[in-house]
Image 1: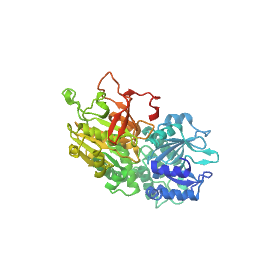
Image 2: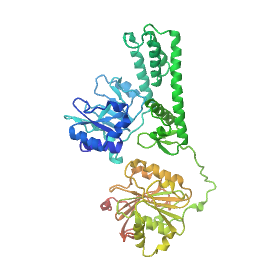
Image 3: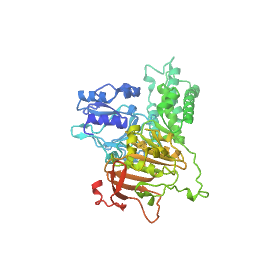
Image 4: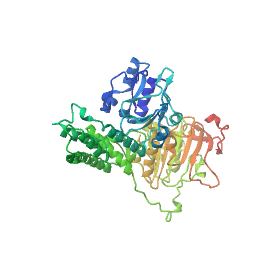
Length: 553
């Protein structure tokens, strides 16, 4: 991220964070934005790459103000430079979580970023030196004022370098409860003042409706006993004239019943949607399915989803805001008593990899390769070597019929009729839907252009469909590393993980050793590729020696 304009666009494209231009001297926004706190969807429609470019063309030195509600963020602001900073109490109740994204402010405090918790207040001074930012905006790096600048912390930058995005965690439930408890306590203390000075509310003729409205707001805001009753009693006693004490409980009960009627219906609709959902879903799909449109009902739906998360019915999925998956608690028994030892598959591999690796049913094999490294040639040779013994499916995401025919014609020991044993299909996504559970499934390739973090979930979905078959999945791989797109997540389900660069293949991970005395991990072999289909081995399999293979890194 070289400048504020490029950074604003990167935050939008990569993190779905919506930035506006702000004056770093005054911290004031150059544009009107307050209405987006109530209508975040309008911000998402308006704040595009083109709009961002227009703003920074008008204010080229503007800082970055990240809108918290549209961006789905809650920020905890630690003002450690504040002389009143309650270090010990904050350390006990609000410990810093260095696993989530956090920045260093221009005053050398800290902003810790979390997935948004709508129930939390937007409040300064929750404790001395600690603020909760839950609406409006916060400055983002690389905004600066003179020589003082905002910058991402070293752990956050390290994560960014590896995963190409920022880590974003959910707030610890204990921390949330601490914030709500402290906030409600402060509200109750403030209510103890003489509010009878108000000239507009709690007077004779309006006090009944006013008190019910206040009680209803407290209930809807999540205020629980004993704070609820104590707060309403303080207000009732300061009405003009004082509200009858014997009627206070009835007023509170009425507010609770009204809230329960509304929440129970929304909660039930959300629960029905979750029961009908399978796999991953977005909160927007839940709201659409239930026809939930009002701000109040949306809030109730969000609260219910959070409750279902705590109960383990659903869980957050990936790093995308508002993305969930239904928890699947069904498990198939693994019968180790009656297993057939002959179930080891007689799979042949290019380069004689079967000498080092045994292929079992339900295995996932990943081929992570750079561009023009020979991934497709490897997969076609693999299909050729096994099509006579196993039902073989080849899913191609980038070749049409003419190009595929051209590639097959280069195999001079095969004619086109021989290839009829392979079922070639054109497919670009949702491979889990077309997997043959008992056959060989070759995926050339699993195509991702963004949201690389979901690759682990896509591979798991394929794994879940397998019974006695296997899946061989090709991934794109950047130069200079062994892992394909998605990094370590792409390796989670793989029993064999091969990394290919032009002229070099490496066994990055092998779990099922063919010979318990020979560890195949980090074995490498040099090769050349002729006519796009024929591999000529240039070396034996040898364990990795950095200097010897330096030219291929």
